[in-house]
Picture 1 (cartoon, rainbow, N blue to C red):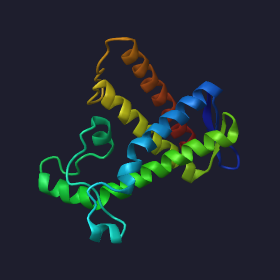
Picture 2 (picture 1 turned 90 degrees about the horizontal axis):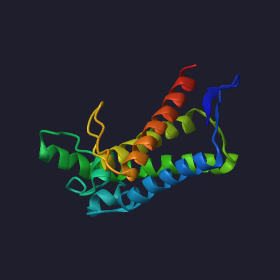
Picture 3 (picture 1 turned 120 degrees about the vertical axis):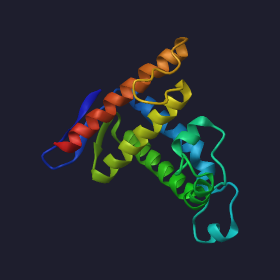
Picture 4 (picture 1 turned 180 degrees about the vertical axis):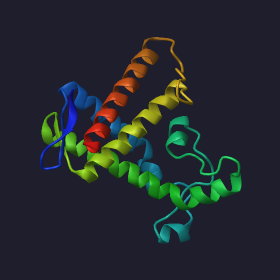
Amino acid sequence: MTPFSKTASGTIVAGFSAVEADIIGDLAAQIAGMLVDLAGSRDVDPLFDSVGIGGSAALHDDPAIARLLPDAYGDDADASRDFRQLTERGLARRKVTNAGIVIASLESGAGDVELDEQQSQAWLRTLADIRLTIAARLGIESDGDEGEADGDAAESLRELYDWLAFVTESLIDALEQ
């Protein structure tokens, strides 16, 4: 990977090998795939649906989706339920849209990525979503937590998690230039 940098015109550019671009694109597609049904409907209230909002009443069973769409109020189940019912669908839609922006930017550049400010923000959000999903799969709960380290699959996921941290840091550094 050629790290992200800001050009004189203000765009953000980076270069990815074909394998790296495929990995990020595939992971973004997986995020979109996990959330696309929630972006459409799940336990839809007809009134909420008529104004484009909605969501389920409970935290999702899949730990990765629960990490992407967490309770808003950890100590108040009723407030969390109400908040989720009003915001889950919209949040899931935005996450799917952001993942689509990442995928499209990778497909258009054959590994070279050129991003404007809005695309850069979509990349940051999607990279964070991918890392949250991997963290949930590894059992990482907080900073410094190594999660599950047994087996080749867990080790590979951990290496991917760390590499995505580098990609994210590179993008943040470029945006701050």
